Length: 417
Ligand code: SF4
Image 1 (cartoon, protein in one colour):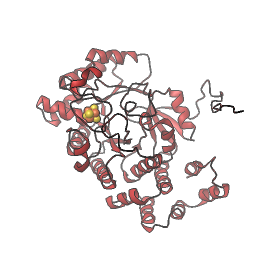
Image 2 (cartoon, rainbow, N blue to C red):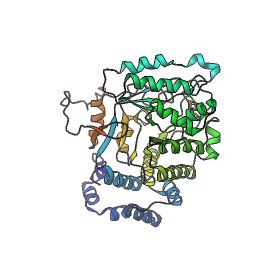
Image 3 (cartoon, protein in one colour):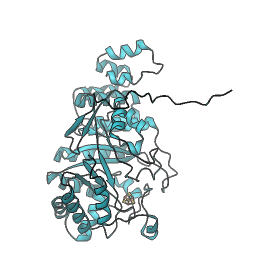
Image 4 (tube, rainbow, N blue to C red):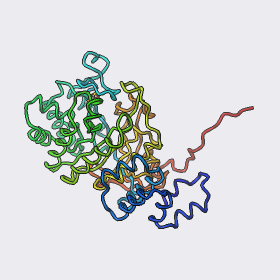
């Protein structure tokens, strides 16, 4: 509660009001924020750890003020994780941005007829990239890209086994159901057989991409013919039942409405009840540069805050909510740490183009470990380096960096005469 009230530090909110906020019981405080009795009932559900219904989820999207949502989301976040905020040291490899599919929100891919504008890495190209990190303490390589016939089952199983042979401890988080659905169909094998082969080749976990919006009313319009929502969920189900972990995402802020969002979250919550295999949910903000949906305005920062907070509140069986800083920007990621988020992803090292090509503020996303730590500490949270499976590698709460005493907050303003 203190951290949430502390977000108002430096604003014109009177001190006495801040003190009242800090001393009120959470149930009293939340009810003082709104006279809406439905929102009071929803808050009672949260404080008694009772699951929200889909109707209540839609009500939150349509009616809840951002302060109310932030307070509840932060309450859940601090009950589970205190101030602990996770990041990891990782790099991305995108084997190709040439793609058979035509997702209307995608700024990154190039069709086969324009493949000269894109890139297509061989296995040796990718191994050379992996070797560049040999002397660096990265723990994860994140591999996703476009869908093309030559990137088939043999390509990926060979790639994963060669990366493992070279650096066995490097966690391979690779490919989404979009790629898997295509390569298993091409290989004429079932999802079960395919995921067993992928696991045997050395892939450790799956990222959460390709989920977009599951509901066919929206998916059929934006997802360019790739796997359905049911197929996405089925591949994760099989992966979880093989004892492996994965993440989940939702692409929000374009043509979907509250019902579509809640339908998406409910399907994830149901699968998590069944398997327990999801680690983290990552809301992905639609960015509108250079794609077929450029005429649609992007969500505002307040809408982003509401989205992250509702994800934390509704997904009561997900441990972690992540703000992916290369997509949302580092300052928004900091703010979202008070809206239910407890993870801001990794060092990245300028190795992903997916969001920079879509107009993200982060055109060359890379942060050193010290920068990530300071970003988290600057908003009063505890920076914890984790591996992909959330084992703690280092607690940086009290770490002193060489340049800690250098004041970097001043920005020179032009002097006017
Ligand atoms: S979002 Fe993925 S599947 Fe869709 S066009 Fe872009 S690279 Fe291809």
